[in-house]
Image (cartoon, rainbow, N blue to C red; front, side, top):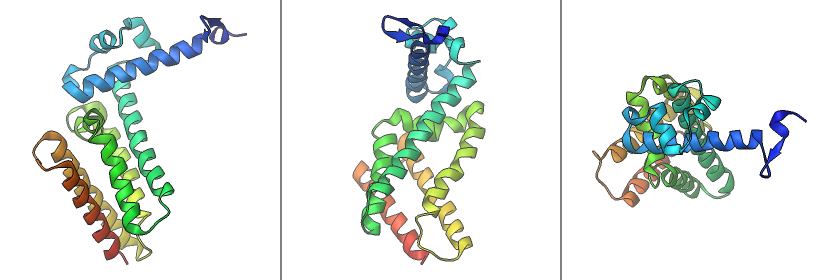
Length: 201
C-alpha cells in the first residue's frame, strides 16, 4: 500500500489532497469572480480556503496555475452544459436553441462569478488571455455543428459571427453596460441563433 492509499479518518491521502485542491479552486473562483484578478494572491486564496500556503503549493506551482485551473473548470462546466442541453433535447430547432441558451445563462448569469471568470477575467489577466483565445473555437464549433447542412465556409462564417455577438452580449450584461431583464436577454439570444440557423440553409 502506497502512502497515498493509506487511510486516516476514513479517507486516503489522495482523497484529502483532492479535497484541498477543490477548496483552493473554489476560493479562487470566489475571489476572481467577485473581486477581480487583483484580489487573487496566494495568501488571499489560502485565507479564503482556510488552508496554509504549504497546501497551496501541494496542488499549484503558483498563482497563475490556480487561475488557469479555475478558468478551465468553469469553461468545462459551460461546455458540458451546452452539450447536455443539445443532447437531451430531442425536439425541433427552437426547443433545442432555447435549451442551449437557457443552460448557458443558468451557469454564467445566475452565478455571475462564473460568467466573470469565463468572459471578463481573460480581458485583464495575462495568465488567462491565451487560454481564453484557445478555448473560444470550442464554443464556435458547438454552434457550427448545429447549423443545418450547407456550404462549409458559410457555416463557419455564421458560427464565428454568432459566437462573437453572443460573447459581447453576455460580457455587456455581466459588466453592467447592458441593462435589460434576464428573460429579454434569453429571448434575444434565441432569436439570434434561430435567424443564424435558418440563414445557413
